[in-house]
Each structure stands twice: as C-alpha cells, then as structure tokens.
Image 1 (cartoon, rainbow, N blue to C red):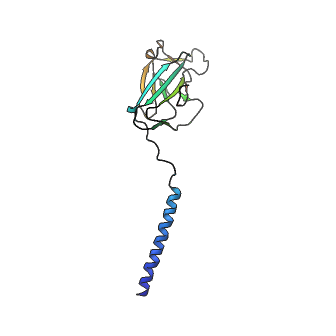
Image 2: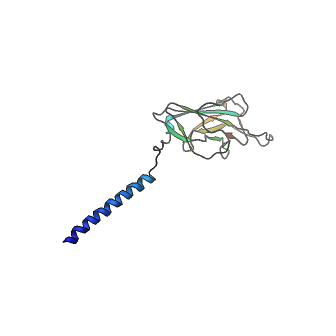
Image 3: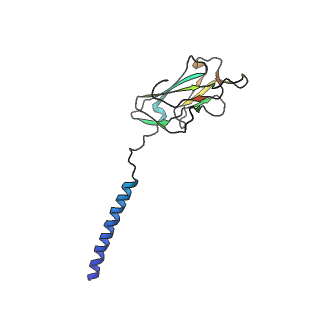
Length: 167
C-alpha cells in the first residue's frame, strides 16, 4: 500500500513538470505580433485609372470602402489587352502585403513604355486590366475611356508599388 501512495505523488510531480515545460515552450514559439490583417474584399475597393499628361504614363488609385483595415499585394496588377504578362515592379520587388486603412486610398504609377524602343517593338492595345490584388478580378478600362483614342502604347511596362500618397 505504501508504494501505491508514492507513485501517484511522483506521477503528479512529473505531470506538473511536463505542464510547466510545455507552457514555457508554447510561450517561446507563440508569435508576439498581432494577428495578420484580412485580405481586402474586392467588393470593398474602388479603382480609378487616369492617363496623365506625361506620355505613356497612367495613374492608379484604389480606395478601401470597407469598415476595417485590410491588405492587398504591394504590387498592382496591370495587364494590357491580350498581351501576355503584367507590368513589372520598378524597382524590382517581391510580392508582400500592403496595408490600407478603412477609408484610405493607395496610389501607383504605371509607365507603359519604359525605354525608347523602335516603332516596330511598341504594341498598341485597346484596353487594360487593373486589380489592386492579383487574387481580384479587377476592372477593364478602354483606351478611349482614358482619353487615348489611338490606344495604349506598350513596351516593357513597369509599375511602382502601392504607396499612401499620389506621386
């Protein structure tokens, strides 16, 4: 009988030690940052694209009409008619989250013709696609709606990252 009383005490001591050790380990691996923000719902965003007076440059703006801050990819998604690919970020950057507060806007600039190409290298498209995030469907905007009746000229297009103020 004496041994039966000893083992429960040893077992309780071992269990307490394991609980303390696991709590310490959990605290060591628990992230110290806040939970990540949700991805912006496309229905909460509005997009505006305008041609600026500088040739071959477009200005992008999206506004978060949602009730809370959210994130989109920091690289705008801009495609050109039926051409393959999208505008690449300049300076080069990897995808990552860009936070936008409720009611706030973000801005980017797209240069559709980067270097002086030969006339044969330039393509002309009748519409562009713009999305605040690559997971979004985005909007298609005609060249005519941008005030470019001859089309949007495209050669090695680049985009800035989203930023909080218009450039």
